[in-house]
Every structure is written in C-alpha cells, then in structure tokens.
Length: 412
Image (spheres, rainbow, N blue to C red):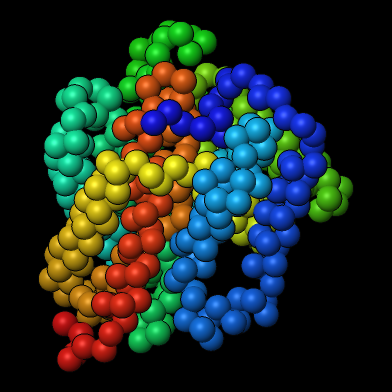
C-alpha cells in the first residue's frame, strides 16, 4: 500500500474540477475543530464520560475516515493533495507546542515522581512494543534490516505517548499525569529525530549527503536557530496579532526547512519551541495561552486530514494494530508495577495503568511525520503502521472504558 498524496512531500499535482471541494472540506474541518473547543461542548464531554475519546482525538480520526475517499468521498485524493501545505504546517505547529511546554522552570515545579514514572513507562513500553511489533512484522513478511528497524522504532515512539486525562478517583495526581504526558511526548519526538538522522531516506530524495552525526548537528542547529530567530522577532512584536503572525511564520520556516533537508519537521519545530520557552520573554505565559487556544482546533483539523488519508482495508495493518495495542497494555502494566515498587507518593497500580494507558494524539503526529518523511522512497511498513496507531488508539479507548473503568475490589 503506497501512502496517499497527503503524506508525499513532492507529489505531482492532481487535476480536479474546481476548488469548491477544497473549500468545503477545509471549512468543515476548521468549523468542527473550533466547535469542539467550546466550553459547553467540553462540559458535555466530561458529563457524558467522553473526555478520553476527545483527548485522544478518535472522533476526528473517524470523522476524517467518514469524509475520506473510503467514505462519502468529500476529502478525495485531489483535495488532500491541495491540503498538503496545511498538513505539514500542522505537523510543525503541534511539534512546536510540545516543545513550548518544556519550560525548565515549570518542569522543576512538577512532582519528583514525574521523572521516575516517565523513565519506567517510556523505557519498558518502548522495549515491549519493539519486541512484539518487531516479531509481528517479521511474521507478516517484513525483511530484517534498516527498514524494519526504522518501522519498529517509529512504532515504539508512538507507543510511548500518553494522554493527560484526569482519572476520577485520582484527581490529586493530575500534575503527575500531566508531567508524564509532556515528557513522554518529548521522548517520542527525540526517538523520531534519532531515526530521521540515522536511517535516511533514499539518496535521490535528499538534498545533501552527510554522516549521521552531521545530520544530528544540523537538526539541533536548525531548531535552535529557528527558536532564536523567533524569540528575536517576538521581542519586537507590537501586539498579539503581530506575535501570532511571527509564530506562524517561524513554525512554517522551521518545518519547511526541515522538509527540504528530509528531516522531521515536527522535531525541528519542537526544538524551536523548547528554545523559545527557555529564553527570557516577558509575555511567555500569555503567549503559551494563545498558542494553546489555537492548538486544539488545529490538532483536530490535522486528525481529520489523517483520518481521510487512512486506508483501513489492509489486513496486515489490522494484525499489526492488535500487536501494537497488546504491547502497549503489557508494557504499561509492567511499567506501573515496577514504578509502584519504590516507596513514593503514587496512586495504586490499577489507577496508574488507567492514567498512563490512553494513547496520546502525539502518536498520530509521530507516525504521520514518519510516513511523510519516507514517502516516495520506502513507505513505513507499506502503510501498516498508520493503521496500527489509529486502530490502536480506538482499541485502547475501548479497553479503558470497558475494562479499566469497571469497579474493582480495591486498587492495588
């Protein structure tokens, strides 16, 4: 299965009858994304117990699938081709927001258990997912080598992400879960960045030929320079509108430069965001609040586009999805068991698993960025990884709602 034109960085133009379909699709996605951020809608989410589904973005993935070529045919291949710039900008923006939350001053205020739980969760989940998904890919016929290693590492990075949802019987531990979610997302982006510099796309698709250490230096340097230039520009902004314009331009520059060099644009933008977060900026809190207001609608629009490009009919993708889901449940359970053995202020194991298991929407960003990075050369596991991550998110939400939310005899 080849990736759709949404992921291809250099796809040829596809003719279509007009721009009406593009306008309709974009207006629909933006409108629903903004509507989903309304306080009334979010209050109903909590009242109906849909906060987990909304946090992981499953409804918008399914909505994209409904309006895609496999459903009603509104978001066709032609429309997705025209929306590629918005897709890549969305990748960069979401990565930028993840980096912007890595303010060292704020991280120091988090509970000391955050680093402990994050280390166990990221390490164990990544190892278990690598083993299970690697064996599954081999069983499905994938040849051992750099390509298979790349696919396994991408899936492991996706498995690490979590969604910071509030567990009803553990609201006092919300700062812990929020901190773990932030660090897990950062760890997943680090893994994606490492893959992009060590296992390069085909030489014909890359502008330069450099050794991996040079690519790593270029990736970090590009993110740092982008963040510094953005900081300099924001210091000169006269009002919030001008600051937003600088932000959009800076993120577009970072993601576009990374795409030109076949580097992960989300990682470069995240480095720029982390750089900006840790430089002195008087309006940092106001800036973060404004960015977060834009983040949720943009994330939902991004998920609609990914859902529209989703091709779920590959049987091998369903097998890999089950393996991905099982490995996440197993890895998270083992990590919670190991983390709770230390005498620290942590919730019970069942509650800890319930909080760490929901799959963060960052996982969709990771797999979409990876598929876009290698599109046109050798698609990630022939597209199976996309199905694994999307269906893994759905299976995880069902598991949390049906199994983990069922009252148990105590919480051990």
